[in-house]
Image (cartoon, rainbow, N blue to C red):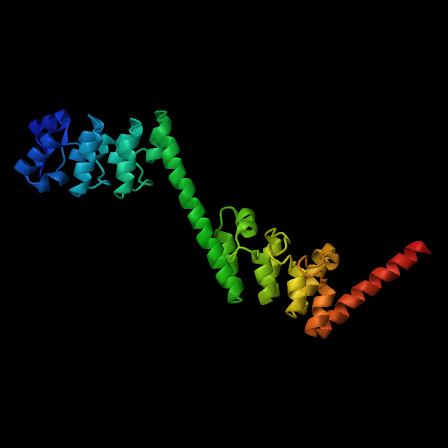
Amino acid sequence: MNILKPDDINFIKSCSNNDQLISFLDEKGSGILNWTDNFGRTILHHIIGSSGNLACVQLLLTKNADPNAVSGIDDKCSTPLHYAAKTNNLACVIALVDHGAKIDIKNSRGQRAIDLASEFCSTDCINYLHSIYEKREKEDELNKAKALYKSIEMNDFYGAKKALDSMKSTYKTVNEYSHDGNNTLLNSACFHGNKAIVELLIHNRADVRRNFRTGETPLYIACYYGHLDVVTLLAQTFSELLNLSCTQDQIYPLHAAIIQGNESIVEYLLTLRNVEHEKVILNNS
């Protein structure tokens, strides 16, 4: 492996503009970008660790300097991103990330760039790297919610369970995601009619919000589409839904079942109504 000489390192550290660096690279050849010193540090490590000149860093990156190059054990196995985060060089951190620097690489002390930034109170870099982690987590949760919806659509119980088990914020994701902007995941499950999946969502604290546009409740949807086992589950778990109408048409779950000719559901709901009526009579006697 080619080694950076002390004279090369001293010159690199003294570079304050691109013209000097371009001249140096033209003289040495582009292969020098991957050369390291005795500590395993590349030119990119040295530029960031000395002047921290953004223009020079961007030049090296456009010439395909490796943003994920890891130095030797004597340098704690650090990447250029570790160097930039340690010194709170936000501009260089952004440039490195934009060119593919991996934010999860750990040094020999088990520290990521954000951990090193925290140790040295590099506030700007902490906030920026935290925002990347936060964005990545949101995208990850969104993908899991989409996978859950796909499983609901396919009546795939095990796929739904796998998606739920992998979520970091199950309650929030289950109740915030809507594939069409109107229906919650529970509403979608009631539409497709797999009781096991509906039960799984309820177990994971899915709430019973209405369809945002029509006002249809999960029970209304199950009654309308003829899923008796789901209707039974919902009526037993959320009895308050029996007396909530669809806000758009002011039609109750029982009426929805009647309109669709779902006789078994009509009979079941009437049985519940009769039981409630008998309770009222007994209480008043």
